[in-house]
Length: 258
Image 1 (cartoon, rainbow, N blue to C red):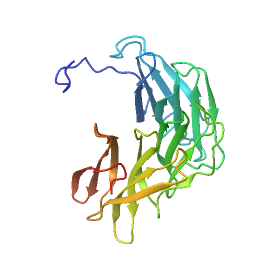
Image 2 (tube, rainbow, N blue to C red):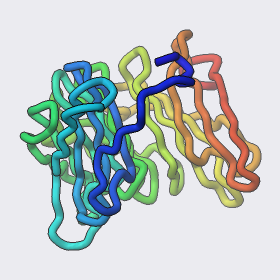
Image 3 (cartoon, one colour):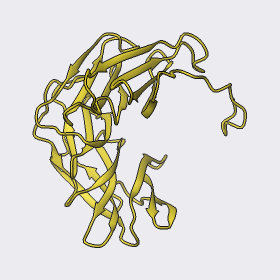
């Protein structure tokens, strides 16, 4: 109940059906209630919980959104955003392709599953809504890619082939939307000796044009990265080093983090 969460409601168990809860993603829906997507690893399902109140204390139905009969990683690496009214969820398909569940209800009990052609998706999937109202998705498939959907609030097709952002086999990507409506991405860009913390600022909605900046050239940086936008409109990026584990933060002095 306090801003620092020093007092809080009792933690609620939402699902205990075998190995559940991996790769969770949460947003507050347009009904002002939490919506959570996550992976049921045991049963090969993408699941959604739509809470009945802000504390998820009552009426928290679990909805299986996508189910694979055979063993696979379907439903993993989920990322949830809110469209004009209902959730939109990006996740990994059974064949490592990108899946997008476009929900038409708050609990995603009714939805359309999109599989946009040409987008493989192994891990590190992130989805947001750009300033043009269309979903934009970052994922890794050996390298870091960004895919821009053609439709407002849907992803039946892509506006172009996914754009490769990394020079090499980048990973550990994270996405947010800048105040100008264009995407910003942080990730680790490997080189011949170690990874480098790297930032990309898109200069178009589909990220067909962008500016890439190496933000830390020392150590083996850029793992487990996350970014947001400060009140000054500039990116703030956090990441770690692998050996030893050390946490770093960078506050950029401009939108391109130059």
